[in-house]
Image (cartoon, rainbow, N blue to C red; front, side):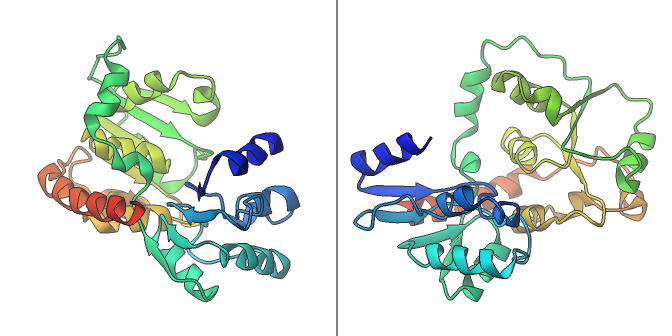
Length: 262
């Protein structure tokens, strides 16, 4: 609420904006939100930092007015970071120097999340978890994956079904799956944290910059499947992931991100 934002200014010397897709072009027609998410509510005497926000796209596609507004407020941020490398390029177009950092979910150790799950009873591992946000059944990659896994036990949930679910239950579905199928960025993050094999289904009209940035960094870009041809490249959809290599890269990136934040 606006009252809460007022008290943020009263109680804080430093205010951090982020993370996730708070700078996307979908806010361009909501004058209040678009400016709040850029820090308009922050008093001039406060220090401003952005940690891992996203533009939600590889290029800035907002209208001219929105671009002027967002550029004005973002240039007031003292230290600016974004979640994707594409976001760093967008900031450069705004004459802002930014750095890429990890999504905050990836800064915590796996044990932190396991503590949340210690009393959860979901321990069946003989299923595939299919978690999607607005996917259409006729999307080519999705259809092809489902066909190849037709003999498997698949638990399918979409975002509307998990909105009222306890976060521990949602995490358990990912943690205990033998394979995650998803188009959700944060489901992907938790699969990496829990070392669960995953596949990202992404139709050609879906911007994948958030996945490209993270999975490219970790050497897992081949897990993004955009078409039947991409799916057919996998001889085995359960192809193992070299988690030792992934975690080695992740630890270095985590150290860099935390050092920047501190």
